[in-house]
Image: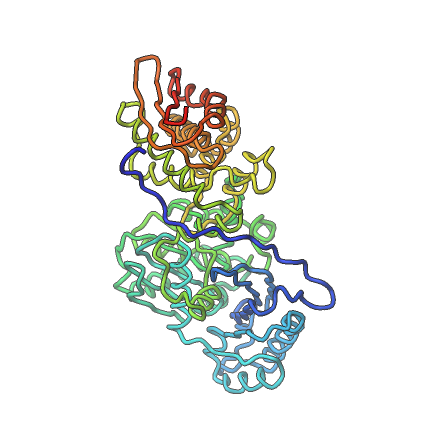
Length: 538
């Protein structure tokens, strides 16, 4: 076998078991025992999320119920949550308990953030919630709220260093982390809702109001010397960041599903900010991607992001769809320490979900890397370390769509990988992986590539087609999954390329598949290919 072939270390195969449908009389027993409920009492919204934990300790969201409460508006000038506010909170929690009871759910963590934390009658609120609902509410400290967001980011994104910002209704949490460890945190006692209430009289701000708001934010953020000129990504957490990203995706007709790890440049956020400020409130309310309940607070939220980007002096904003609730889960579970490699953990989940046979995938990966090294030696391929990582991960998940349907496996593979959230992989890399792992032929590749053509140069597209053809060729070399290939060598004779394949067993099935499919590699290399199998058995 070709020397120096690296491989991803992935877990043994697990059999995927699907969750049974929930019936009307109560939740199926298959769900019980592995469920965690988290209630997040924010200043703008209150949300119940129920997670299912699989056998590897990874969580999957199975319920998500949101109610717009705007508790911040019920905080009096004396700092008391009014009786109307308390009653609204109790009523919402009582409606949530109908859901948690239907699951027979006993593991529910109910947490409150800034508005309850800032309320002078918080002890009364705690007692009322405990006596009138199924829940015992916990009021998060400023550190806890910031730390949970940080934990979610380092568990689900690839960033080693960055600044996180979570804009709630009445507080804004900012952290700085390095080497995936929390270094600094701060909680400002203002959020999108309180900024709107303090600086903007109408539904949308006037130019003068925006000047005052911007000046205030600059003054506040300048007190954090540990974010100044950091030149690291700004990672947004929470509903306001998510809504901003969704609006931008609609503006540019974005072709990929999902928002986690979506990136925006500083200039794009500045432009979006200016565009929103020129719109009427009715126009803002009609924006696709914007929750109607955030129409009056989206502009102050975007101004926060815009101001922070300048302070940090970065051109990278990235969204983390995972935030406080997931951070709570990670701390509560055995995953309080970040996994060593977020992307490999995601590939592990794909292996389980789509019944990828680990040994077969690693063999294909090994063969693909070996072919790449041989072609590089002959000057027929030029790839860097990043390209080799793409080759390895794509060959591992190659053709995973056959789990759904073998006949149309290429289409399913591309759709799944292009549209599934893969922690540790940004959207561009998702498309690269989808293109390589679904490679069927040049025409299919070009069809899948069409919506993303502006993402890649002509040279990058040609390289990806060649890498896809190499993976397909490697797949054919282990057609029967017997792992019979002992060694590969090649001879470059100008117009013709000869592969010498040393096998340990009968190679007739592999030879048939290679002869049938080698044309794809021939087209990309611009050479005819002869494949000679040999060994001790024939």
